[in-house]
Length: 402
Image (spheres, one colour):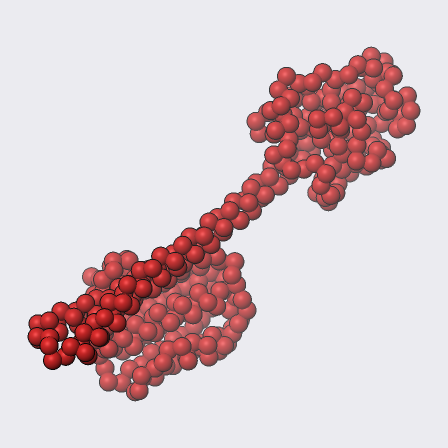
């Protein structure tokens, strides 16, 4: 019996093999099906997928054999086959082949007389194992059987590559999730550290205005008020930036099941509608399967803007919902100031300024809300559009993929 020579690139070959994380895994139906088909096509009682480790021939899947998880590498026919990655190794009669004539698996059970193995080559060309068929009597395979065996070996490699890529994607997603979590923690710490001095500015301004009311000139009071207002705006800006940054790590996988009615009942108390403002909603009570938190954030932003930038005494907000083949469709309409058509694109940019100046509560916005909304909608696989008439109102329409 001749031992199979160790490939010159053995270290690189083993590194490639271990990158698949296939060794010592449980049986899998996809691989079991392949060895079953290989045995049936070739008319042999035995077939297996072997993986050549450093000192063992480990069997991922087998039919007609009773070798457990494999055999020592030095006894393996497949250890010879991997030395010629581009060629199928065929042994028509092992009793006449000096490499295997006295091999224990030839002399004793399972009495291998015929062997045909196709090397399983990774994308870099290294052979990590074989798909082989075996028989207890000498024989040959037809050209059709040989071609079919090669095709099945390609399927084994495709399955291994698919497993590897799925695993790499899972690890990448997990790594990104860890990074995102750390960035989110960092953002909150930074936000806290930035907002603390803002609170100090606001508190000190109030002290100056209240305790030194008779000592400050009108100009000084105006400066103190300006400092206080600027600090409040900075706090709002920090909060808005945090909301915007969260959309960078939003996952479309965060889905729930809820009805349109349940969505509206959750939204209504969040709005804190002023007197003489009304909220109406229309649409089928269809089951929605998109992240409820994301949809609420989008609708809340539109509705809050509809309140803040409404110059009418009696305000109305109309939310409509419908369903298309691949999308859920929402629209939010108000009877507010309206937006000039030239500004339709600008309003979705994180410009840190607003187009409308102070709102009905005399508060300046930061111009980040709609940019956040657009990013969320895009991550949900949808699109957003706007129509508006100055003095009459604005309608935002958006879709999200089911």
